[in-house]
Amino acid sequence: MTNPINPLSRSVAGSVSINTEKTQTNKADSSTTSRSNAEDTVSLSQQSQQVSGLQQQLKDSPAIDQAKVDSIKQEIANGNYPLDAEKIAVNLINLEQSLLE
Image (cartoon, rainbow, N blue to C red):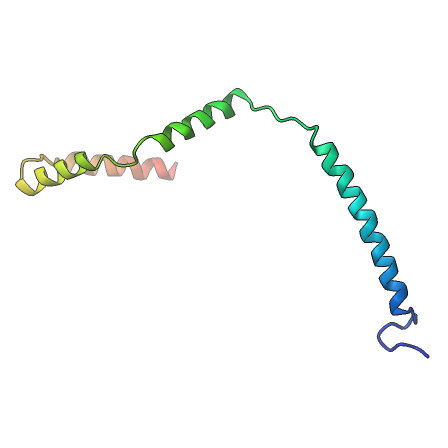
């Protein structure tokens, strides 16, 4: 009798045993691989060590000096903080030009 799904007429039990053998072989290979990985070493370049140090400094420093932000807001609200519109415009143009380069 032929199987319409599997025209080679392989039995289900035979295919299961083949897959089981492959799984056991893969498990043996992975245990060998994990043993060899335990012996591997990693070394960081000087640049990567510097980057790692800078990342740590950034983590340790506060992101925003809220006291300074609040004092500038207060000065702006009181009209005591000088805003130079021309200087702001020049800096915005310079920023835009640097982004296009």
